[in-house]
Length: 159
Image: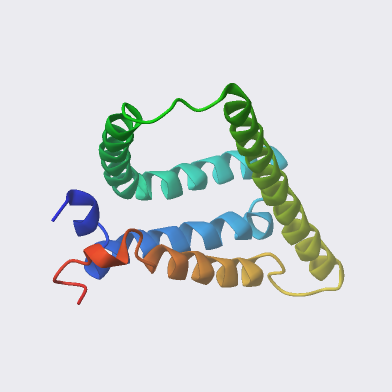
């Protein structure tokens, strides 16, 4: 069993999922507890670092898988025709559009969540940013529990 497959067992995903969920909920709740915009930005940066650090073990395992896959591709490519320049340009353009679209989508979603919380605050709701933050934290924790990898390579603990 490879290291990345061990990292996908349920028991190894529970703590990172809980940390991710709690940090996500705290991230979205910051407008309710921190009045200063600058302090809120620093708190969110710290919470983002916590979430990123939580995913490092899975990231490292994924890097190992990518290195193995790259070696396989290089070996197979030695026998194949090289990719035409036009295909490389198109692939690069598609990747760039995907990255820009992903970032724009995240920014739009963040702004929508914040504006929605501000509207709830203006309407007099209690904890207008925290309640949606708890929902988003639960979603983040649930998604962190989803196993990543090839289902055909399940470990004996996941069966």
